[in-house]
Length: 117
Image (cartoon, rainbow, N blue to C red; front, side, top):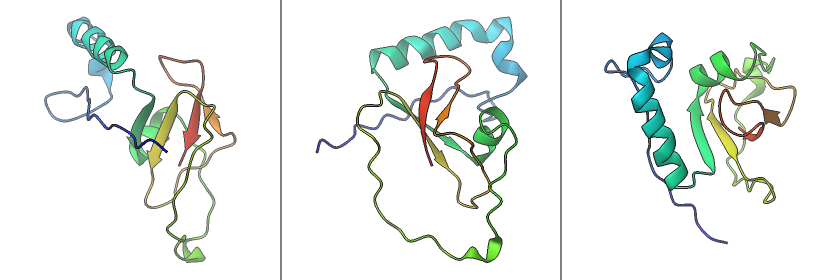
């Protein structure tokens, strides 16, 4: 199996925010367009988001409903389905996000992306 090639490619405001009203301002458009060109150049196949970004933009407010007393989940490797072309990987250490599907609609980009938490 080929190992992934990881590039940290981020678009953020000067105060470190990765989402918000600033992204829809006319001043941000040139930088967003360049961000998209760079992403295309590297042919990115996955995006990594944390709990806050996923909760605000993708999980539609659905909570996991897992009891806090559930204990630890065993650490093990996960190999995603290979026929998918685009992935969103969600880092959710508290286990608060919930999903009703294995796919999510991304604001911009492919119509659907495989969700792997």
